[in-house]
Structure formats: C-alpha cells, structure tokens
Image (cartoon, rainbow, N blue to C red; front, side, top):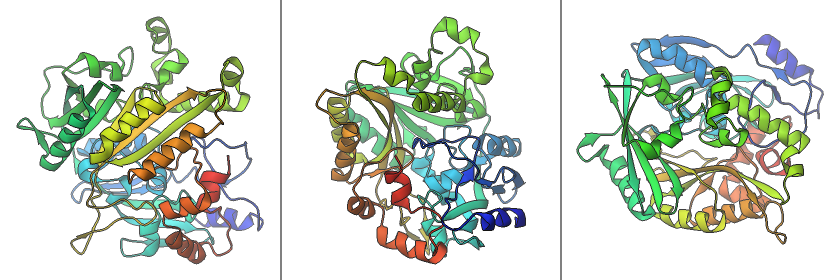
Length: 441
C-alpha cells in the first residue's frame, strides 16, 4: 500500500494518472501510453468466509480467479460478468451484468465495503452510508481506484439446467421476461437465471436456467462446441456450474466468428487456451492500431459496440428500431432490476440513475456497420444514443460515446459527480468522466 501511494505521489502534477494493466475489457481504444500505477499485486482473493458467505477481494482480481476461489466452498459472486478477465474493481467502477441480474442487480450492489485510493492519493474505506461508496459505480476510475472489496456470495449447485424458449414476436418475448422476473418461474418450473439471444426480428430466444443437483448429461462449449449456436438447436441443455458461468467467454459471445475460429477445420487446430475473450480483444486492439480491417474494406465501417438498458415495456420498440436502422445480429438480452436497499427503501446509484422500481433489459450488440457514402463516422452510435434517451434507457460507458457535454451530464447526474470530484480529487489528478468517456477518442 505504501509503495502504491509512493508511486502515486511521484507522478508529476499535471501528468496523466492511469493504471498499468495487462488486460482490458474497455472498447475506448486510445493511443499507447507508457508507465502507470503498478497495481499488479492487488490481484488476490484474500479470504472466503463460507459461513458468512462473503469474500475479501483485491480490486485487480479477475472474475476467473475469484470464481476459482469461491466454487470450492460451494459459493459464487451474486453476479458474475460473462468474460473471465473482467476485474472485480472494474465491474464495480464500470458496471457489469449477467443472467442473475434480474434478482441480484449489478455487481456493485453486492459490495459491503470498499477500500479506495482517491484522486488526491489518500486511501479511504467506505460503506453503504458514504457518498463515495454510492458514487463509485460508473465513475470509471475518475474518482479513484478500488484496492479491496468485501462482497456477498451466494450458494451454487453442481449443475445448471437451461431451457431455450423461442419467440417470433419481440412484444411477447418482453411480456414473458416481465412475468418470469416477477414470479421467478416459467410454466411451473423455477428460474434462477434469465438471458436471451436475438437472431432477427422474427427469431428470439429466452434462456431460462435453474440450479440442479443432477444432470442426465452435460454439454461442453469450451472446445469444438459453440454455445450460441446451441440456443437454436437445443430446447434443453445442462452445464456444470463453471461452464455455465463462462459459457459466453469461449467465443466472446459470437464475436469469435470474425477471426475464423468458428470454422470446423480451424476450430480443431486452435488450442483451447486461445479460445478466450482476452485473446480476441488483443487481436481487435492490434487491428484498431494498424487499421488492417479498415484498409481492406471498400466501405467505411463504424464499430457499434454498446450495452444499453431499456425499460422492459419499451424493449420491442427498441428492437424494431435496431433491426431497421442498425441491422446487426445476434443481439444479447439480459433483464436487470436494482436490488439496493437502505432502511427498507429501494435506492439507486447516482452516477447511473436507473429507476429502482423499473425492470430493464440490457441489450448488447458488438459488431461493425458499413456506412453509406453520405454518413459520417459515429452517426449510427449517435442514433442509438438518441433512441435510448427517448425510451428512458441508459447506456454503459465502456465503449465510445458521442454525447454533447450538457446531454452527458444530464444523463449521468453531473451535479452529484462534480461534488464528488471536488471532494475526492480536488486537484484534478484524474480525468473527469466526460473527458475520459467521450472526449478521448
């Protein structure tokens, strides 16, 4: 801790402060920078209290390592984001989501205590009653860095049973999402996890999953099998708990097809250790740096890589817009409702102001769109941003954003953020949220 504070203090005033990280799940690609705070040692699970169902975890610990530490105790984090190298600190500062989010909310909502190195170089420990604790989610390292977190855990069973339920109509799909999330069941059977895959305007599937002690068989999507394709082919499936948690990582949802590794011949030749989201992300980073794809393409291509939360009763309207104006597939669906409570009342999180009483559906899409000759780069993303705002939704900030400054602060509670910034980073050592998420393109 003292060494880290010493590093921080040695950075000259006015020089940018950033973390030296070997991996990233952000899609705001920047020019290469040298140096940074060396936080590599803050990557351990310090302890797991099986009786209390809690864990003490350092901020740079990946969910892959966190799950490896908790599963032997028959426990897992309440929300496990889909990609193995997402860090706990990153998911809390930058949000995260998964198929347990309709009952467990977002990853930061299972944090009990948070130790932060703030922008002024001080280390503070904060809890639910503190303003920094409430304002840390969606701050993306602009108020400080998470060094240690105490989190809640929940019990697991050995297997997960999946039902892939097809829908030809998005409105009907949204109605079933609402009913399942309210009742925790579907057609009389329990539901512990909900997500969905949209292949087109007339083809969407909800995957409704539940814990089970036994399984008549288990599928393996860590090698030649491809999980998202199974959604169309199987009505019922079984996975081990570990394989369920990482079912999306092997093929980075479906994005691995861009690298040719879904071709049967190529698939057999690629070692399993390379079928991982962090490997694909490094390839994308190299492509962005050397502009290989853009040089080969005859059309100007705009990356459309976003996750947005849409109120469930506006989901069909958003999907209709998306198919018509953007036209990429598949698309991921994941319902979420905040679980946060203080003194028996549901409360929100100021920098990502979702209504605690509203059920939202996260819509995730990660692809590129070929622009028409008269379209400017960024036009499709701006179109999406405008539609999300119109429908009362919210947009995650891990990728490129195009908001004007006034609109940005209206969406992300600028007055509260500025108060936190003045208190915990009065000298402006860290960039502000708008500068980091929008201006640095």
